[in-house]
Length: 367
Image (cartoon, rainbow, N blue to C red):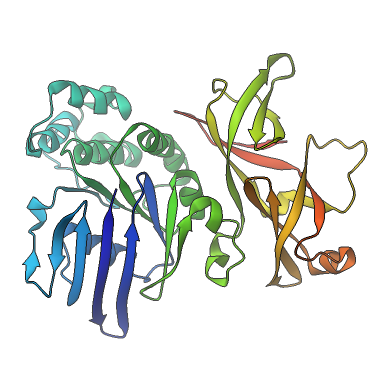
């Protein structure tokens, strides 16, 4: 995906001045607190909001250039949009809502694409039901399918889970993960939820006060010590590869560079890529290799940086081969161990969260 966004608009008491470019496929999260300009930014991309000045280019096509007087109408931008509320047509059943998106596509996809999206989102049993009979998560799946079937060049999602309860979020997140893994449509995902960004995003753009505060891969920003990433600094996101399963012990062995992690059995084939989240509070740091302990995962590491996080706490960045971890310990412990950049230490990982491929849950498991 190639998307360039440069917009500026003066609201009463708030200046939106955003400038970023996305050059990679996958999911890019726009992350930040309420009022930081996330929704306004994607509304400008969709053509629902016209900034005072700006230029927006998607895959080489200029959608907006205020200097040149270019402002492509929303209906011609070929951009899909999933809102916080599903905005389904209440008088149409789920299938008719899906077909509405399919019929808008130019050129119209083959019938098998409709069938593929129905399977992808697991909505076959919902097709003859009216929106008022669907749960919030079911409505959002239909809305997502309608947007996908319009064959968009870009899919925009404005906090699609914000109005859902926790159980409904857990219902729909696996479908979004599957869409990320199986679809080739680039996505911009607006959220202020750290969990959603950690699970779904490949890259993250942090907005703060109407400006881009930081931008980078989810793996870098979640383990960064930059002040702009403090809201994300609750743990690291890493990718591992399944090496083998140990079914007699109900365990799986995952590769992290040359290191190995032992976790409860993961329902994924060997060589599959599995995303992990490791909470910063679930890492203990040792200066010497620990002896006989119950923790299965002890990784040699190098201290990449230290940051005082306030309230007597310290964030420690740990470089473990190709991955960056983040540990949160007391400032007292940091002083006692005299931790400093460049020191060789051992990271003792007490638990991890496994992003299981395909449909499933995301449990926290002892490691």
